[in-house]
Image (cartoon, rainbow, N blue to C red; front, side, top):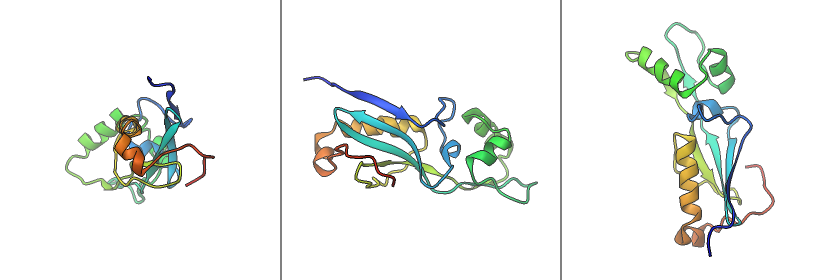
Length: 144
């Protein structure tokens, strides 16, 4: 029997050009996606805190809104920023993605792109040994 249902539901904030957790540091945690595979599900959440401290600013950037207000809109903008401030350690804290089961168990592995988290979710949802430990059966979706 083949795969019947395989799909990803992304948050309205998701954009392909924004893979970095910095673009999803809105609340802690912030829901990013649900990955469904044959009646089972894992969710991707952005967790942790972000602090980017520019040498010429008094206050750090701590959330996605501030990042966008600073005209940092894509992963490429973040890469350019890091290259520009290569000699300054501007990253004090960074957020990350985690996978969460429907019964709200965090799997405690950090991912640093949306794609990496989604791909791992698909791999785990297809792994019978993983599903013996974490059935990932879809119930009513709860806030974590």
